[in-house]
Structure formats: C-alpha cells, structure tokens
Length: 314
Image 1 (cartoon, rainbow, N blue to C red):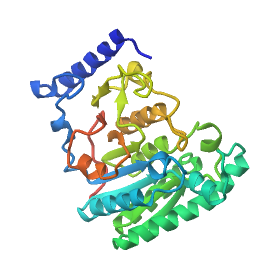
Image 2: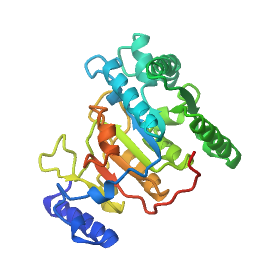
Image 3: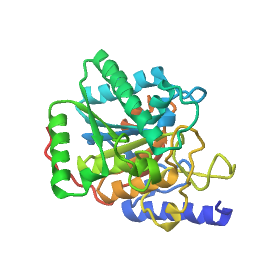
C-alpha cells in the first residue's frame, strides 16, 4: 500500500508527463478529473481489440453466464463493426462455463480437471456467441491460441494472415487461449495470465489501434480501492515506470478470474510499446464500449509510445 506522500508524488508525475509529452494547459489539472478529452479522440481508431474477463461474463452468485450482459456485449461489438471498425474479441470464461456445466462446485485444482472443464466450456461459450451474433446478422469465428503460435516467425506469420483474412471478410474473431491443450496459463500464468497479456499480444499481432480491457475494476488506482479508502483514481498514464508497475496487484477480488492489476499493467506495457493505446475500464455494463469509443472520459487510458499505422485499411 502506498503512503499519501508517494500517492501525491505519483499523481504529480503523471500530470508532469502529460504536460511534457503533449504540452498546453488543457492537459494539466488534478489527477482525478484531469481533462484528457484531446487524448481520447478515438474516431480514427479503425482496428479495436476488446478483452472481457470471466468476472464480467458470469453471475457472481452462481458462476453461470450472464446472458443479458452477453447479449449487450454482442450488440455493442456488432454495432462497432457496423460503424466500419474492425473488431477482435478476446474472451475468458471457458473453464468457468465448463465447470458449471459439469456440476463442479469448486474451483478446479488439478490441471486435467481444468482442461476438461475448458473442453466443455469453450464449446458452449462459442455456441452461445454464435447464436447471439447471428441475431444481429454478424459472423464470428473462433481462434484458439497457444504460446507456440508466437514462438516461431512462421507460426506467428500464419496466425497474422488468418486474422487479416477474417477481418477482411468482415468476421469478428473470438480469441481464447487453448486451455484444453495448453497448461502454461492454467498452471502458472507465466505466459498470458487470464487473457490480459494474450489480448495485448493479439493486439500487437493484428496491429490494432486500440485495446480495451474490461474487468471487475474501473481503472488504475494508487492503491487497491477494495481495501484502501484513500486510493485515488488515475485517469491517464503516459509512462509505465517502476512506480506505476508497483501498483499492480496479484488478486482481482473475485472468484471468477485469475488475472489481477499486475497482468493488466503487463498488457499495457506490451500494447503501448507496440504503438497501441489501451484502456482499463469496468466490465459491469458492456454499454461502456460505445462510450469509450466515443471518447468519453471512462477508465484509465495508457497512451502509446508511438502512434503508427502499419496495415492497409480494408
């Protein structure tokens, strides 16, 4: 937990970073409520990756899928696609869905049990997504990824080509780690970590313009807001230095997901280092997606180190 002096120092440093990078009084102000509208002009963002966590997809009481929220998510993504954007969805939830379908009333401990839950849950989750997207005449496609897809240049190139073709055809790719055969995420979180890092890696692969992480927290705070009433919200981050990275926490406060703020900050480091702006926002209400893309001051914005475009618009 950060003391008040360190909290103020971090806040002052963030304001200084924004001033130095972008200049002008319009980018100065208090840490909470800082005017960042000029930084949130996302109308030119053509390729957007949205990541949703398990805790945002399920009822907290039962662990079962929240179908009303899923329908809103699908409608929001389809509307983004209808507006001319290219959209990729990175979704968690396979193990959670499989666990409830199989009647497993505890969080699985054994790798084999988790993989069995993933095998059942991934099929069910994708079936529901397909049905909901079909209601809006939108085609989606499943892309299951393991770390091996990124270990060789050839495999990475092939994966990139697949994404490019899907997006060219107007498909919304739905991405998850292949938990049925990959143990890296399940066992140690060393590679992707509840799909936070996976979403950043995918955003880098498809050369996205914006990555939106929706989870059980509405952004980055100077301390854990669940336990520290003095925690202050940070609306914009321009430099992921050691002080910012130290704010990462190892838990989410929920029973559904496994990625905490530490994995989200790791994702931010990958995304911003790849020239991709990233936002962490609450997934409590998926209507937040169009509010974010319309430039409203929601969540924490991590500003890309470079703003570059590396692919041709389709």
